[in-house]
Amino acid sequence: MTEIRRIGVLTGGGDCPGLNAVIRAVTKDAIFHGIDVVGIEDGFLGLIENRTRPLGYEDVSGILTTGGTILGSSNKANPSRYATGVDASGAPIFEDVTDRCMQAAREHRLDALVVIGGDGTMTCARPFSALGLPCIGVPKTIDNDIVGTELTFGFLTAVATATDALDRVHTTAASHHRAMVVEVMGRNAGWIALFAGIASGADVILVPEIPFSVDAVADVVTRRSKHGKRYTVVCVSEGARPEGGEQVVERTDPTSPDPIRLGGIAKWLSTQIEDATGVESRYTVLGHVQRGGSPVASDRVLATRFGHHAMELLKAGTLDRMVAWNDARMTDVDMALPAGKQRTIPEDHPLLDAARSVYTSFGR
Ligand code: F6P
Image 1 (cartoon, rainbow, N blue to C red):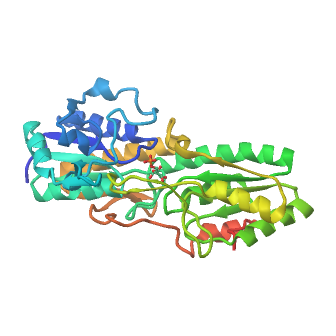
Image 2 (image 1 turned 180 degrees about the vertical axis):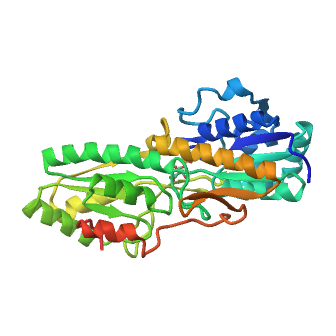
Image 3 (image 1 turned 90 degrees about the vertical axis):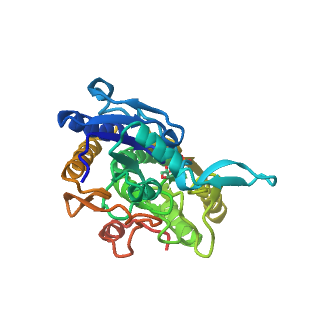
């Protein structure tokens, strides 16, 4: 086994609160053990373009509480399938630029990489191990949809942000006796909607895992407007869809490993509600607000533990693993596990029952 003397660290994919806390934990732990750290800029793009900088104690001091990533990120740079141009029809041309990355890694004498990212980043990292550059994965995403870990840092901060927004929408919904539809992120997983919806007491929670009926949602609005509080708050996941219908796609980006960008279901649904019930409706899309800002305390703690565990694995020579939080403890899984999969809400998840027990509708 090669002794680990110098590591590279990068953040790939969409950002989330807590990335800096991991960079700090990895770097400080490494420095303490005499290991040099090279920061790779903008995810795998920095390896492709050989853009790096050394990370010392001062570089990571004071970043625990800050949102974003001091290294920058990219969700388009998959070295095995990197868009280098367009053909005559305007379609992207992809090339395998893994060798270019390996050359940069050799130049910087990297013995291993710590990759902080989602399923896409874990997938991008896999070929490097086979070429002699072992990797440790640290899972991040506000969506909490990475297979192999029950929790990712960033998720609980996004839930807190969405809950705060829903609480605010609640009061204005009540004043104007309206139906208010709030769209949250999460891709094809409804975790943010489920947690924030329960935390804010939303009357209706719509998630991608449970296709909804517009009639059922309209019934809740009508019932509440006639007999109840005279307003309704709906928390809808961007990936939710009506029974027999499709998800609403906001845009596609063919150069991105995940080309679909969801968005627009709240606007569509608020019109449907108003047409079906006559109750005035408005919608709000929270969007990237959920990805920004300072991580909540529990995300800072989780990110620090993930960073520390990543370093423990590296020092022990246990490579090509992804750190994980399962059964209320720190652990690690095969880095290949999350590739191409998403951890969605199982139909027997206890939170669904808990929500139903307080009369929350899932639009069925
Ligand atoms: O995966 C995180 C996430 O914020 C999703 O919830 C959302 O669908 C997507 O990224 C948005 O991607 P982008 O930042 O490319 O618009």
